[in-house]
Length: 204
Image 1 (cartoon, rainbow, N blue to C red):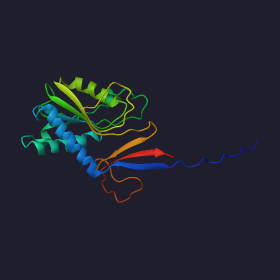
Image 2: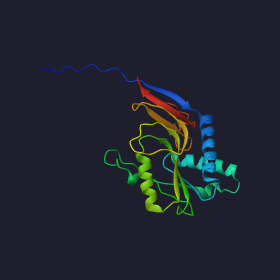
Image 3: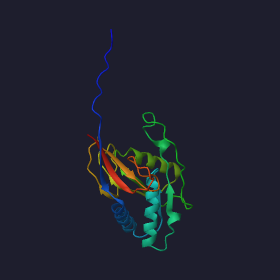
Image 4: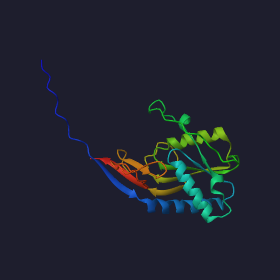
């Protein structure tokens, strides 16, 4: 019996829509920085912990904006990086994730007001892992959450205190945050130019 190869199906087309450009991201971070200062009634005891990959550069940017608003703040002294890889509950279902170093500010996090920073809040599982990681490192006085994008579809009772943009999406869509610190221009671009934008990708 001779097998007849099946006809190839129609090629999938990925539709991309920019929802935040560089100026939009900068305005959102400026607003979040002022919200953080207002919620804390100043900059005392603030620590910003970015979740790799893109949460950390966002934390660095936020620290710079907080320092611009309050000259007594040393931006570099309030920023750290919190790796949550080994605290995730999906390690057995996802490809191996390279761990990033956890780096705390010199003053640590005990009795501090810790603001977790991430790029996209989705199911809430990354933030749950971050809370577990924090408990292993110390005992902050308060833990808050700031995200650039909240796309909904929560699976755990977790809510962000500071949100750059609430972005209604379907679960089939993908939200991509592209930052010059971590990404170069994609989508076939060859010049390697840095990008700062948030896009939604949907398959047609």
